[in-house]
View 1 (cartoon, helix red, strand yellow):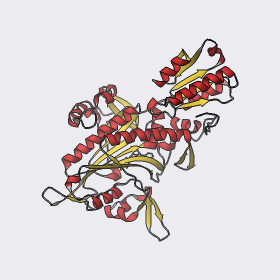
View 2 (cartoon, rainbow, N blue to C red):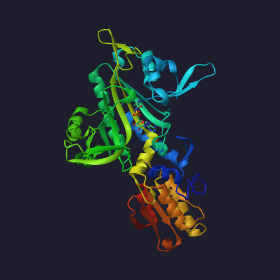
View 3 (spheres, rainbow, N blue to C red):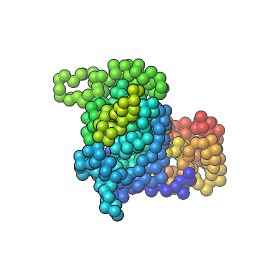
View 4 (spheres, rainbow, N blue to C red):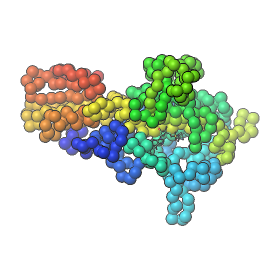
Length: 436
Ligand code: P5A
């Protein structure tokens, strides 16, 4: 993409309404635009990141055996009356009346709808286990939407729902999602800490939140240093391997940390590190809380009907965009982890109009593009200082800087955004390094 044609409405001034750094940077980098309180449009740069995150979530859900569906955003109030949650949900639910005076709502979550789909089509225990998920916009009329997309009213969530014939099966489904979550966040360059949590309006008696560390996080956590040092992608088994063995090892590390501890309580283990974090995922096991009132039963091995055991598993996909920025930025702007970066390379032409610089930039842009590397090419007629500042602000992992002075010696400069490390390379070496 050529920056001269890219719709990237960056801001020079720091927006005063934004209280946390991720919100400020998302506005300054032209990623989002608020349209009403807690409701945002996603502009091209933001949309690219959102889709990258969504894709990692999708790949890990698929690998864990969940199947993607797409349910609507608008739901019928009747379904929620069946579960008993229509009245319980209160003012957080956006209630809508259609032209026939039918009561509808903008879904805050989908336990009821998926249970209805399940009971319509699944009749035998032989069709279990089953895990269905979708990635869809949700609406919660939060009293205080704030911090940009971190706590929005409309937000993108991945929600999965598991169905099993018994509690033992449901526990395996829970563990499989638990592991998929650790892998998902690790792939995004995040260290997620699982913590035992309250179940709130979703219900049930087993639940974990996944918290990523960031100084500005809303949740206070204590975590074991061993867990912080663990390389999840290296240690967690691949999907389908022995989950229980990993869980036994994992539990031995995090047993002390999976409860919220009070820093002033003398019984708080001392080997714990106190930190702040952001909840990016939340999983629940709630047994028959929905299957019972909605009568979602299958024929068991003896032909008798059995209520299915369920769990639900959420990831805040749009919140993750902000959470990653909170965890990864410096005073100059965002530092995207490679896996979620909107472009891998920012190619900076220091002197548009200089024939040789234009030619080399054109070759690099075409060569990288032909190899499938996403490049944002700053071909604008701007001062170098402006280009460097914009590139740092939008945080692409690699900056490739091309100007007449370097080209005289046959070199270009490659900068790693995360470390600031720079090296002078030949054009060919730079290409080879970025394509690898
Ligand atoms: C689990 C999936 C549920 O809704 N039902 C289906 C369960 N869980 S949850 O904890 O309430 O939400 C799941 C994740 O969604 C994100 N989230 C939000 N993101 C942005 N703005 C909000 N207002 C918001 N509310 C929830 C969180 O990441 C949460 O973990």
